[in-house]
Image (cartoon, rainbow, N blue to C red; front, side, top):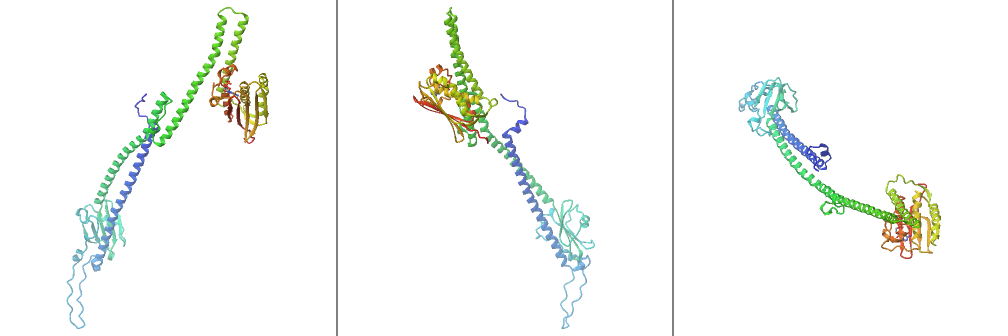
Length: 504
Ligand code: ADP
């Protein structure tokens, strides 16, 4: 049935697909953000480093130019008067000096050359500016000072003999230094062009990053969908199979290797479930069948007795037949009850330390009378072995095996019962010289209701549950039971149970 369409956040957090999607998207966003930031930072650094280098070079250039001027010019004074050149040793006058240059002519030389690699120097809008003051803040020269530039702010700052870079409030980068005769040199530049360039770069980065992110989320959605689809398909198929037909299996070729393993596990689970359901069905059918026979006997015997007047002997015979049928039913119900107990939990299965030889010798003495009635002799060779188990169920198992060895024996036959310990195991063998079991039947004798010879088994009151109960009891004690048989010669049952150690 379809669920409601309401957005259920808890199911989103539990969904493998959404978790994968979330993981991929977060990873991608982190990668895009980190790499974008690193790129952006590197571009930022390289742009501003270029500006700084250019400004420093310009300040040093102005410093060198100033140094070539006579000191009075550096101090904002007029050029000193030229003294006439001294006479030559021979008394003749030397050729006259070049005419004296004026202050303005000196200062004309004070400019930023185009060759200086300052970003934007060829663009009038981004033209670097400079200002040179004397030691007592008299303006020597200024050029290209942008509008909105505050000279007072610049002059208020600290000046060093080394070029010092600072960033002004209204996005101007400046270098300041003390030149010759204490003059103050300021070279600066508006960072508008660089910040515009960086803003555009950032916008491009964000756009590319977002495109990557959208693409990545789309791809991760497709990947997550593809990864989860086989699981969804598998659960749908598994549900269909479990509902309709447990005998069908998932086709391993349809799944990737990792999921094929899961499909194989599911197939094995189906097989076990299928086998268990079939056993259950078979068991119910067998149990009903077994109960129906004695019930039919009681019913038909009673109906026959009641159909007309009978003699007391006939009535007695009817009651005897009914009693036998009731006994069979009691046996059967007891057997079913014992199996049900074995199948259930260990809660009422109390274990304690026992000498297995005591339990075996009790069974031997109990069954000796029945054996001798059938001219069968019981030969036992028992060694004391301590085990940890439930004595009632163990005795029942031993009774059953010895009883079978008597029932399925030949007149004058023998039953050998031996008990010894070997390799930390109690080994109990019950060997008879009876009819034996053919090879085709041997693998099935421990199955519930399995009987080799139904007629003979029924005659002896057997229900086909005895060996199944024995196996159940032994498995509950972590032991094993095996049967070997030669048709016409006899059968040997061997039981192995763990020996009880005080260190256990
Ligand atoms: P049942 O109650 O019919 O004896 P069991 O479960 O005890 O049922 O035995 C299953 C079948 O195994 C029997 O029907 C019988 O044919 C065969 N079987 C068991 N024990 C022996 C034995 N000692 N010798 C020959 N056949 C045996």
